Length: 319
Image (cartoon, rainbow, N blue to C red; front, side, top):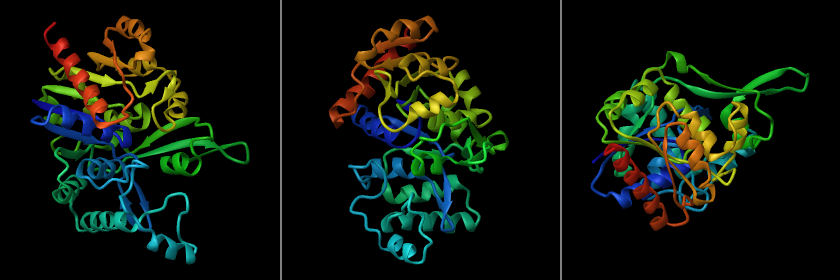
């Protein structure tokens, strides 16, 4: 089975781990979000790509869901002594090695897709991980300033430093309109037997991938069934602050609200059992809906989620 997934960071990577457990013989391609990428200390950091790579490769800090296991912070401490460390986005020593290699290869002229492939040669994540684009795309958030006007800041500053507490007036994908899908992205979509939207942030993880010209159209046109899993349970995000991002684009923080955001793409949508009543609203939008447990509490539960998504895809395919 050829499965293509559009994934962000923590939620997407943990779901993918369950997917590989549920369908170990599948050929899985992951199209990763790169609009979270940021340059720090002259280094190109790709948080979502790295989280997928570390999680599936066995190197993730399981407690926090991002960064390296058994991490140390000697370099960050020394940078702080110089007054040069960004205290709201600390890079660990082990993690720095990844960013150093990535930046060195990018500076030498390799595209991000080739760099990602090279990094994965070490981690062996069990999937083919492709960035959504080799071009620069960054999520910026427009918030109010102290003078009564507004200013745009990088998504990471809004998310990590401000904890998304400053109301977002707009979310802007800088460079998206000029970007092109990375090599292999459109082929992975067209050749898939199943296309999955894991429970990633719908606005700043899945949204930027679909905003790259050609990708949303390719998903829509693909013959494979398209099934997503709600990142909202009982009116709250499974993890993080997706509600702040949804509010910024005028979408209700509900399982049905997110489904309708992707209504032009989806054939099937899984909601948690507490949101079973939402299945009627989702199906009214022309999307097959089922209620199953969606808390990724352990590997077996996550694998069961993935199996439910594949079963719904099979159901859609045969009707």
